[in-house]
Image (cartoon, one colour):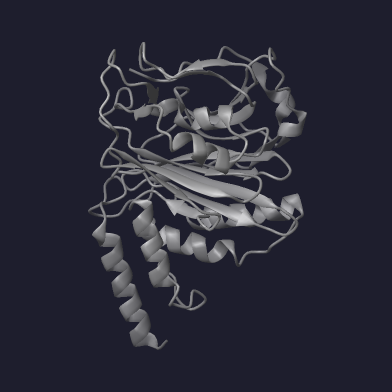
Length: 351
């Protein structure tokens, strides 16, 4: 492709980016398929304001409910998990002891089914949607089979103290490399289930992200990649790089490779673009090693990443819920499972 061709590609990229709504809260999620069954999922958490996160250990056998009143879904957790909370009112990211990873990313186009508190529909608060998956499923296939029956509806509301109405989609990946994306579009659940669905951002809806991927397959990424912080551009870069970084079954090298991709698609701290006042700084990043059960975490304002080895965590029924605070610039180094402290579990935000 000559320079004129690259210019046309750049113009097309801008058109694609402009076709959807501006990113209100921008995140990126990517799955790395390395050799010898090495699977890692990385994500950035980008938000227009500070989004304090703590890490939590939830054991098996916890009694849960959907936090939306008398018709809430109720269950007992089958699997233990390590999760990253948002404001200690929601699970926004996590991995369970079977290597299932759940990530919530913003999606402006989300439209959930109608729900009336005290009505006849069973409900589940969006704040506990990811946790429901981590508690109940070992694989993506299990989750898809159960959730497509739509035995409950996901219920959302405003983030407390803000004017932000919560609109998210859910991605799941498992230790085999399977993937699924769950979105509510026009009040209906849409499920994209395919091992190939290894990259997603927030907007546009995932079907349109796939169309963007097909377009960029014709353009040599070693010569030209879109470089803005728009969702569509981050999607293209993540999709290109995840298969071109070092492919290794060494846990440290694989984690470094995934972090390098996630950092590449992160939004620099405090960045702003005229006309996009809600462009979102990356607040924290996660890389989950689903083969070795290692959960890496870093924030934008602390000097290093640290990790939890789930093999060293007590997930037995009756074991205490434990918390590692990361919401106030705490600095940790290395493997931190011993630093978690017993804590009362937070209450999931509901109606």
